[in-house]
Length: 503
Image (cartoon, rainbow, N blue to C red):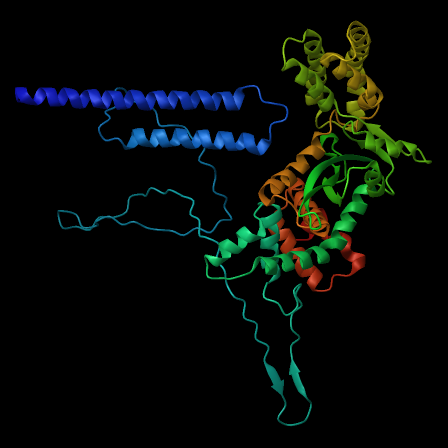
């Protein structure tokens, strides 16, 4: 029986447990609220996707910490039965190596007889071994004949991208993928290697990257040529800070992205993207990049693309982006009540709902459906646009947004006449996001030439991603083929989608 003087201590302990539970529950509720807001709440049109993912990541980590704290508190007694937390444990693919561990119990029974197996429980857990470095030692014996003077024979040395150097093609691929796909600058990679006792100067890694970019240039040029043979492409540009040595500060260059993605209408050509670095944003750069291209180019509202319409051949049509038009109206609604802008957003949203239904249909089917379902909305939108502009000052925020839409109206409506045209320019904007993330990690490119190397390798890596190809395996195989003397006439076979067929 509990002594009377022990009761106050027990009560105080219980109160402490209750307060701890209440504090944990309050923290957990606040974190769950923040998580729901980040996941389902309204998001800024200009939010960086990487920043959004980081926000969710940190909130989820904090939630897991509180839950672990609750689970690990031995003083906490469950008030009611709680179902196990449903989590996405992921899946473990079959190609991963399996290392089996058999945990045997005591097999001798108390009666003196040895127990026999009646079944087993099997569980699988993901284990990670840090990157393993190894040295490939190549021996080439020399042979001579004792009976004659036929000379000495020796097998030729295998060809490598870095002739007489340290790295294998697999190492070069790893450095390229780490820098341009995983966004690890070379100095950070050097730090990682040094922890394994491998001292590689950043300048050495840079030399490897430069040599690899040089050898991959013919593949990049073949990719660009293949894209320009298409008759429907996307184009966009993003800033690229580049160090200006003379001024000891950065200047603003641009990566121009030329992309193809015919998957929404089941086109025959595989998706791809090619980046080109240019020191400015002049439309002349777009014209130079698109030399030899004719067809439909889907772009945003940047006026520099208008140079393409002045070609003597008149062989380029510009399709514009409804996402940019929507963004103009959306920005107006964020600063206060804007009923006219809200009406415009509702009409644009109706077009997107139709497009969702049309994804995966052929170009002809999309054209037919758009004429039946989207054209009436566009006709009504045109009337609404004219009436609304007549009622508003052109200098008001809503008036400016409507002026933008009216300015590009012809190109915005071009999707009605061609089932290959998308409603917006988002496919190419998605390919630019890794460039932006790499830009944040690397801060800036060190030189114009370095920026073009960036463009070459990023083009091949992002095209691999678009085609579901693992970039490291592709670059390793491609560099090996180039080192082995792949003929220039066969260079198209090294394009990501062709390489995947031959592996």
